[in-house]
Length: 109
Image 1 (spheres, rainbow, N blue to C red):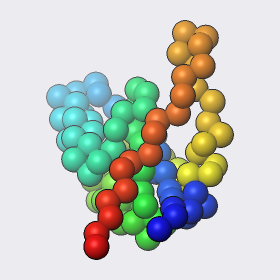
Image 2: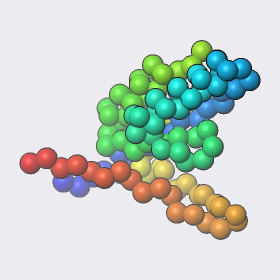
Image 3: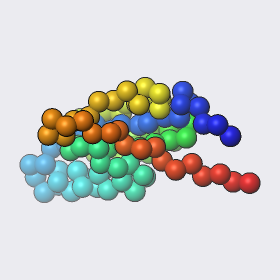
Image 4: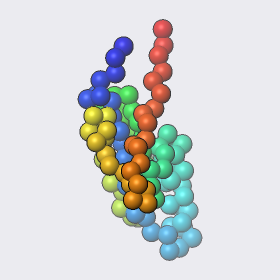
């Protein structure tokens, strides 16, 4: 089955959480650990990324992020199609860097 790049989704979670107190640092670590357990990977500092097979699947993971939200801080969630995400420009030390590859598609017969 052909995968439609207009239906495959990417979720990006951006966050700026306080880390001044021990409790805030624990909340930060707990949030970060929770989203990583849900399959998000580090794109850059405080930006995590997850590939989803469909919009319905992405909604499930967005709800999981919402359930893990800490008491303080700013968290933003951006959802884009694979087609939109393929246009991302990333540079590392002024050199172009290819975008992350999509997740592996599991086929069940």
